Amino acid sequence: MSRGYQALVERALELGAAEAELVDTWAIFFDPKSHPRCRFGCEWWGSFCTCPTNIEPLQGEILDALSSYRKALFLKATDPRMGRDITLSVEAEAKLIHGFPQAIAIVLCARCGDCMYPEPCRVLHVVPPTVGRRGTRSEKGPEARRINGEMAMAERPSPVWFSVILLE
Image (tube, rainbow, N blue to C red; front, side):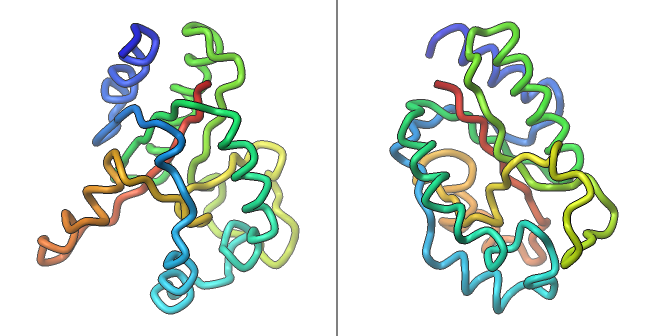
């Protein structure tokens, strides 16, 4: 792993990420099971600007963007606001310090207390794209372990939030 990548992984962990791992972007894809999992498993279905029903038209654009990147940093956090702050801090450092000027964070929208949906988003100009709401998965990294049973083994699993920083 190059120094820049390793420094970003270490920085994310220093800032409080539960896990941070570098992955190849070819391993990231849209999981078709995410739509029914959200629809039938989330009491807030359709209540946020970032719900699948409200962002499905963007999936093609996101896949196109993914194809222009080779590496991504998957992050796991136990608090959505902390995860967002860590992700955006690491994204800024990737751009300004480590030579990844095209880095982009894909992270949970946790700007507001209550989402204004169906009213227009109040902070759309500062809300980054979101991972979980778009059904993004990876066969490698912290999310793969969660999907493959890490949370299923816990009696009452703690919620976790994932984010991705596309690097190059």
